[in-house]
Structure formats: C-alpha cells, structure tokens
Length: 390
Ligand SMILES: Cc1ncc(COP(=O)(O)O)c(C=O)c1O
Image (cartoon, rainbow, N blue to C red; front, side):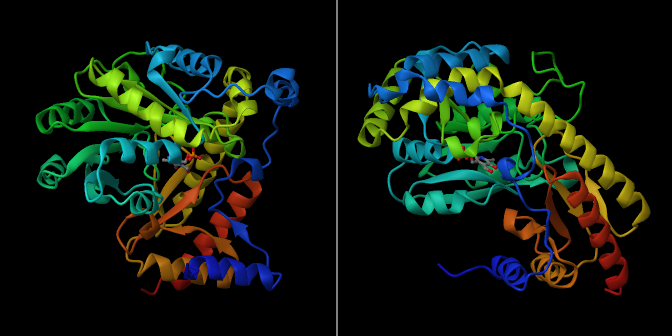
C-alpha cells in the first residue's frame, strides 16, 4: 500500500511542475504512435450488442489466435486456446489450475516484477532461477534443478525476456523440456514480446536460428503459451489475452475442461474485444512496424551516446521494448534513479526492480519518443560523468 520512493520522486517532480523525461514509460498508447481508425470499425458492428457467453472465448476469436500461430509456423487449433482478459489473468488462471495453496512455481531472475503480486494473490510461492548475465542470459540449470521440490508445479519462461530482451536459446528450450518431463512439471511460456525482434534478419517462420514460438515444440510436457493484444497489437486498454495449450491426451482435455470452469466463474472477457480480435491481429503488423522502427532508432541513439561515455554501457537486446544499461561501479541503483529524477528530471528504472543486482544496472524503455529518449540519455551521461567520483 505504501508508495515506493521511486514513485514518490516522480510524483514530487510532477507536482513541483518540473520537466520529466520519462524513460520508463512502457504504455504504447502514450508514446505518440498512430493507430489506424480501421481498428475501431469492428466495435461498431451490431454483433457486439449480442451476449453469447463462451467460457473459453468466442470461436471467431480463438480462430484468430490459431491463425496468429499459423503465421508463426505453429499448428494450434482453436480448441487448444482460451481467451482471457490479459496475460496477467492467464497466469492467475494457471496458478489456480496447477497449484494448491503453498505450492510453488519457478520464475526467471531477472524478470517481470508483477509475478510477486500474482503469486501472493493466488496463495502460491515463487522460487527464482537465475539467468546468467555472463552467458547471454542462459538458464542456470543446476540452480534451477536444485530449487525444484515436491511442491513445484511449473516453470515459467519469458521469451523474449523482460527486461533482458533475449530469446530463450534452442539448447535451453530442449533442456527445459527434459527437466519438466523428469519432474512432471508444466511449462508456462510468456511470449508477449515475440513479434518485436530487433534484428531484421530474424525470420519468424522457422529455420534453426529463428526465435520461434514455443507453440511449435513437440513434447509430452504440457506447454502453456501466453500472449495478448497489449503487446501484439499495442493495445493494453482493450484487455484481451490468451493461452494456447500443447499437451497430449488425456491431459489436454482435462486441463482445458478445468480452465473452462475457472473462466466460466468470471466470464471476464468482454464481447466487443473478442469480436474485434480478428481485425486487430490482421492489422497488427502496422503498429508493430512503427514500434520496431522507434526501438531501432532509440538503440542507435544509445549506441552513439555510450560510445562517448566510457562509464555507461548497454546490453544489446534481441527483442522487446526495454534495454539494460550497465554502469559499473555505481552504488545502489534505486538511490541513483531517485537522484536522477531530482537532479536531472530523468525517470529510469533501477535494475533492482527486475531482480538485477542492487548496483550497476538500469532499465530503459525503448518505445519512448525519440526526442525524449535522446535528451534523457544525454542527461544521464552528463550526470554520470559529473558524479563519476565513486
Ligand atoms: C513479460 C510480460 N508479460 C505480461 C505482461 C502483461 O501483459 P497483459 O497486459 O496482457 O497482462 C507484461 C507487461 O508489461 C510483460 O512485460
């Protein structure tokens, strides 16, 4: 319930009328992208006035998600899909499906901070497994296996990961499946940033090096792949996500039957968004290409800035909307981030928010408007040079 010192510093800066260059903004609707008006057309259809409650989601919406996976080379049928109100809701449903109170799931560190809240609300425990910064964020499998106990139900993978921006390698995918099979665990894969591959040469259609969706994997391990329009169509306000389950029978039918009961209890997904989903997914490349152009531009700006600033370095992301900044020798990154707001009017997340070590790491959003990003990074550099006595 208490405001974090970071949030308080942002609020105080705004209340004092000071300029704020927010390099932590990750809400795409606040970043000056242009959304095609055609996206609104399906919301005016008479079909949105009909209520036809379907706990797993309207068939047309599930078919649209199946088509999305087909375009990524994965054969997923509408029967394998559950429509939810968000990826967060998908996680929560899976925690209820797979766990009893006190059970645990394994989550990557560094990783996405919302897991703590989701797990607490669903009475389960999280156990962190480390991604190794010195090894391109490969999974530390020894530590991962040691943290599995008789109450462990699933391993969560975020690929591309937030905030590191790396895709889970083919070798790690294979080892994850072996481990899940050995310990009878489900694999939950969050792919919300899948479509934001920064390297132009990354093919989404297959090939050994390509960052394919986990939905293409063939395995006896149950694999739940999660995503939604908040990133795929850059429309978080529409509140629509999904999960696709790949599993053999009878697991698949039983799990989807149970998920149907959970979803039927809430029926939380609104009809207009479900009706509009085929159109939104069909047009998603338009907004994705604007966002990718922004990300590439900002990463180029960052590379130019770090070349001139010896105490700031960045870790090139493969995908996603964030970039990691390295400031070797920096004291606590949370304290640094707060003084940066007060002294320079620049908001940037400390790495500790994402489970990175307390010192030396910052996380910047790359979807910030170009001018704001450039000025913010310049101010960060000059502040670092000025304060570099540490
Ligand atoms: C890795 C990851 N998963 C899920 C989400 C949330 O998605 P949704 O808005 O669909 O709940 C985010 C939001 O930033 C995210 O970074």
